[in-house]
Amino acid sequence: MRKLLNKRNVLTLLSIVFFLIAWNRSINLLYGMFALLAATLILGLLLPRRTLRGVTVARTLPSTAFEDEDVDIIVAISNKERTTRSMVEVVDVFPAAGPDQQSPMTFVATLPGRASRSYTYRLSCFKRGEYQIGPLRLRTAYPLGIATAERASNDSITPFLVYPRVFEITGLPLVSGGSTPMSGLEAASKAGGSEEFFGTREYRRGDSLRYIHWPSSARHGELIVKEFEVRAATEATIVLDLHRGEEIGEGKDTTLEYAVKIAASIAQYSLRRGHSVQLAGYGDHEHIVPSARGEAHLGALLEELARVAANGTTPYSAAITRAADLMRDGSTAVLIMTASVLRDREFPLGINLLLAKRLRFLCIVIDDGSFRMPPRSVLSSVGPALLDLRGSAAAGYTIARGDDLPGVFAQ
Image (cartoon, rainbow, N blue to C red; front, top):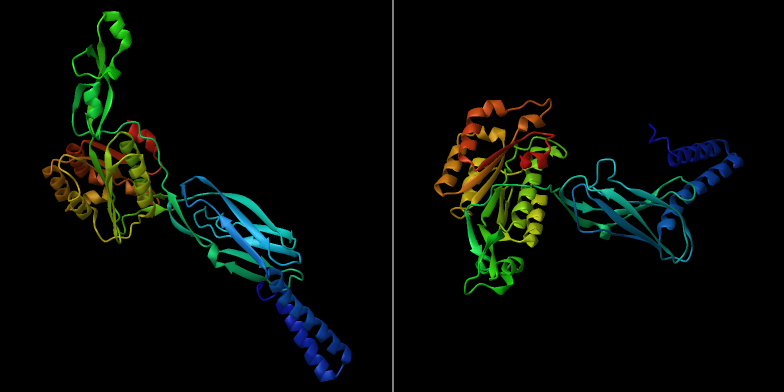
């Protein structure tokens, strides 16, 4: 009813009433009232369109951000005409923000001819994902407020990627090989490893002078070199469950969102310690990031993790089997799954395949019952299967909704 009782409809109705009465009674005054109302209505419809003529708007923002990160967005509005424009609203569409911030709006009271103005607003990225920002829309009801004119700037539609939030992990058993004490020269030439100070020993022919420990040499009266412990690096393959129906929860509190945060954090931890990392997930299409090492590789992993969705038809047991073809013998698999997956009769086959390939694996089990309403743990119903899994794994973790994730991996 309120939508029908707006200024434009009321004026239109009054114009029709005055015209019919004037035509029936032949009263000139009523004809004049009709003409006045009709002219007002026509001006109210046309002038807002004229106000927007020559007005352009553009937006500047970064192409990527992290979940929960604040983003500064700069909007510039320009008047290409010589006459001043007044009472113009600029409305944006920012679906990456929280539910109550997705339509940020500003109001420009006056915009002189041939002038430009810019303003900045800040929004927090609510949830990881791939978004289309925009379009920007110009809107005004100036000067009479009878009708509103609106124009969208379609060239202001911008792709925007929100990476998952990453937390710090202080320790994770990923190393597949042992440790070997070596001289500095040998440690430096050991490919794919990381080195830590191990001790000192006497100088031997062929040792590099750069690894001489001068204080010990002065104290003993002979050359002493530093010795390092070389830890072999491993290849870690993170396998995500993207089966349709396995994502439980709403908004940011879903099993998949927890799994993605954990995967991103494990990837960061591993890459910073010299390991190579690859990602495997099977949604409506494959999400495969080949193995590589180094901080630069983290960007590729985060980009893929920002796009994954639980929309596939491959059960997690089958995903493990497919991902096993990507893994080298002796490497490490990182399995992130919901507890309900343990009920799948095919699941032990995937685990046995990993063991047959001499693969170590870490298992992170998410209690999907804690994400339901009302929350109800399902860990007790899969207790025997969970114990068997932990017995085969190099390490096991259980996660419930609301857990302190850094604290879980610090144990």
